[in-house]
Length: 174
Image (tube, rainbow, N blue to C red; front, side, top):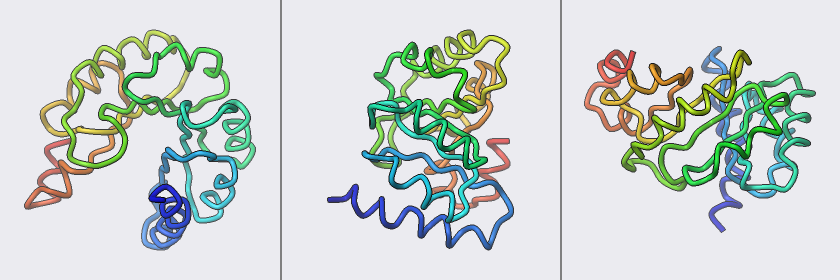
């Protein structure tokens, strides 16, 4: 299936990108099982790995394995997954990725309730130094509100890559 293609090609894409940038590469695994692929993404040059809480029965084990590799360990949640799912994992996580669209394809509309989820998650984190990453439908129209609500990392795909001028789109986001 399509998931098998991503499992094989994901590390190859990271490996191809690693030599052309010194920027940290952030991978987000919506695959099941994810455990067999953690080493491959590390070896390919990933700096951050986030696994979906919905994709496996042992996210705590995966988070610890990612941290043991010396990488940033993240946990991703789909839009309909309750934030409280991460509560028992907060001492094992470096970032929480909130999906602001349903995973699967680019170009979807941002789910407005994500702003409330960001603020709620920020309150849950308290003084912990954990990044809040937003993935899906991020653009110039909502970036400022997301940052104000507590997001620290924004993933912008379509809003940049569908723009006529990448540089101008990135500047507008900043």
